[in-house]
Image (spheres, rainbow, N blue to C red):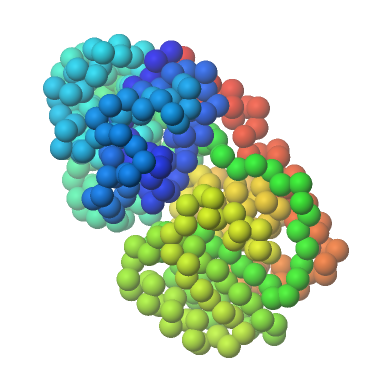
Length: 373
């Protein structure tokens, strides 16, 4: 099948994070052919990529993936109509909920030309309660407008979990929804991790309140480790107030050394996963969490919030899922710090086993292959 995809950001961009990884992984494991329309710049950048050609199809990424990079001003109704007739796609896939140019404009063109029945929309966690709080009034008004004008009618919704299915149904009760869990690009490690000093905690996630950093900082304040701890934080620094709070916290805890490393691409992240003993992300809501999948695949036990799709962690010796209560979070971290080397190895192996069973399971791959059928 031929799938026409509209997405704000795509490879080699990396700053938009999860939605790029989710889309690429889905396409890599598919036998369908994809035609991707995207910007020629990364998130928060106005400089075109230096290693791609704009305004022409690129096929060097993967055989079944063709990419058209363009300036967003070039994306208009005439362009979409021209591309549609050039490709004659079986499906149109929208990798966002709110994007004016790469979701709403294609939707309007599809409605105008009677193509809506071929549209699949992936909200990518944008209907989560935490996500809806950001610019909340504007989003609530838009959702009212969208329902009144039936903007999202006669389309198929792509939910990546039963949780996201419920979030879509809450806003659009008559929505036609198909579940296909996210696919990870992570590779299961065969190297057993060993506990060593100093104990290294790793957090990978943009510096934003939705990722649970305020709760994490409060947990660190209530924790009083007797040994030296290194906490590496890797992520795009979106919120200046939060960055300042992290920097202040690093001066308050004598045994906890906090270091901000900024945004890193996938290749650069490898060394951080190799050194880490514990992955920590008390997110207020996670649609998937590619960084979580990566940590588990590297044999790193995890401490996360209970607001993610990752369940039964403790029963499978892969990590702990806690409420956002700082005391509970601190206790979960302290548990792993005080393990013996033998017991830590049990949890590290458990994390890898969990990843092998739950990351890219045969059922997940089958559901994704059937998404466009």
